[in-house]
Image 1 (cartoon, rainbow, N blue to C red):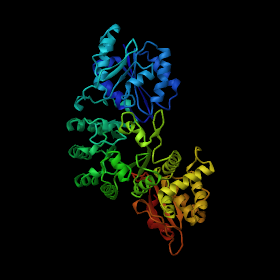
Image 2 (cartoon, rainbow, N blue to C red):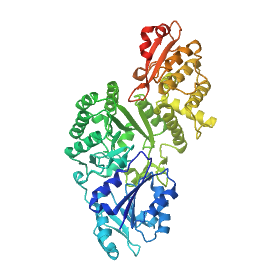
Image 3 (cartoon, rainbow, N blue to C red):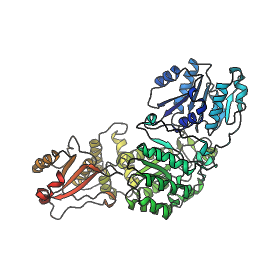
Image 4 (cartoon, rainbow, N blue to C red):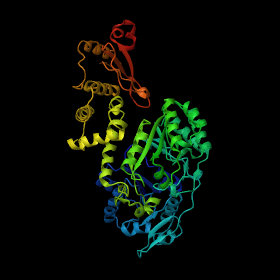
Length: 582
């Protein structure tokens, strides 16, 4: 007997915590359980071949919105090849409307509903210890499943009891399976909040793994030199004491390698928590903060609990620490959020200048409150995963398409971190950041630049074209800002055509580059500031050149930008400064 657990991840770097957790919980039957992982970038034929060659007696799929279309196609083909092999699915994408799911997909024999560890264990027991003619009868005794009987009748056995977090064994002992991949970890399940767009709000059974176990397991990751551990806890700091204990522990045990990612409610952070965060090594932790909207009516309607003014204060306070990467989220398509309202939400959060601003679109998920109230809100959404919103009572499809353009421009020119100085230079020329990215998106569409691959230098050239057409400004200042940004990130192999002519300084620049260090020297006339102090550039009164030394061996751990040193022409030729170039 062989039972196959199959995961199809979004990217190779991701690992699927669910299937590893199921396999480990069913360790009694470990010899019978095989695990296969793929990504949505694998060809369907390749995945089909791998599953077929496993010659499994039972096939199970872990299902999410990003992979269910693949799973649907695979099941159709697998049933042709293996018509008598039971196929089971589980995960958030299939845990709701299970009867309709089984009726729609005749190739699916059963569904594991909700939390899967205990259910999968019982499923293994049924198939491994039971005789084939007993399987149907034994399935009746397994809570948390829905299955199709031989007479095609659908049976739902009801929900399984929530499992105690400490009963879930640690699934990461063999770290070879996770080499060069992100580790996902959970210290709690459930969520205390009731956000209407989120499936986590359905599970009110908030449970925590004991701190003794959590510390032991996080200590293992730190000792193993894992690059990144992402906590999947829905609101990590909903229990202050639990969060503080973990943060104290990872700070104490830190070896300067592992980064920990937490999704937090910023307005729940206390002064005690902020004081602790302030003392952490830069890059030890990063915080993801879901804002979603700044519209009061929207926040109330989606049943979200948030103190926006405190959130803003906390985000700004953390920025002063200089050691934490902050990732803020917005969602387009929520109730009572029209185009102008969303633009206001965008501007308010963009003005906070987080390291990342993710602009997402509402997914109308089965089982969520919004799914149950689609008519009330006029929600029109995609029929297939990811069920993304197409229109609401407040937002037209044309407006959603505009926001999608803004999202792409935001990713290219802000979230990439490759245009830090340039964006600060051009922002004041627009009435708002939302307008700026909107105009840029319109320009890309008009010129046919969307859906084409562009180099970094080409992105710069497009920005020059855009500003010449849309706004009157000092073009030389913009060219120098773009040059600064290019070298701020990397020592360019080819020099951009719009960069200043370095003329007589070319020789010293080459000489410095031959010292064996990864550095670059570049002349400028405009004075650019960087980081949190970044401001509108100025021209020195003398209008003489000054020089920036970009050091790629000393990078900012949060932004990955090169460190810089500034020299006048006199300082550059002063022998006392030569040590900076060695």
